[in-house]
Length: 263
Image (cartoon, rainbow, N blue to C red; front, side, top):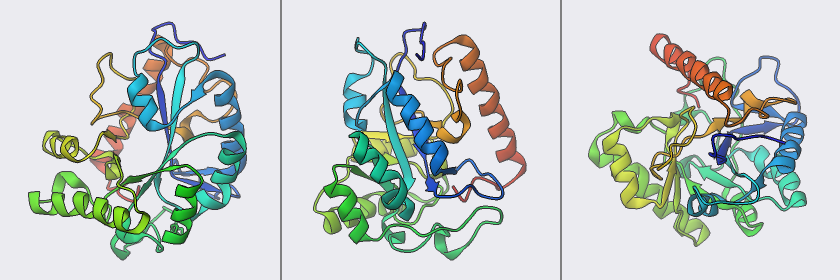
């Protein structure tokens, strides 16, 4: 069982692509199907998997089991082909964040591939209808996947509200959850997100705070917690140190490279 002596049991995992065969060069955004199945199985043994909306309403409440939410960024086609069948079989909810104007294309945002990051197909609206009809939440992830901290106020409105409008038009449901592209967010972007969405998620590697801002929900990259024992220390001081070390490494890489902008 995963222990949490600190009393903070909540956990959000973020996935991107779930590929059928391992990549030649491992990348944190791409988990292979075998690792995914093994990790999800372990999670269900120790966590109650809930929807993102239930997760937010249950934050800090006493429950018999710790809770976790599953999220998938970008809307890769392999979600519908690889990840979704397993989640359906297990009866598990998840949220898929969609880049509305890239639906049916690839993760080469703006037509620009990023060296070292595989370019893979994204779901079309037909697949997204199937995902929605299977009970999964469709969230917003902007129109074109820009770093929102670098755009003008007019562009920020267009990327977010425009994404909401497109998803609403195509699927007949308004998205209430949002994921910041690249996890990039500042106070102005968060303030804007609070106006449009009920909850927004980052890619910040940290445990939940006691009174968490639902516009700045942290998530853990699932890739880093594959294999037996990877999550067993969740909530302990040693696990928090591990998160802190990974977060510092990520900050250093962001300073010296443009890596991560393909995420």
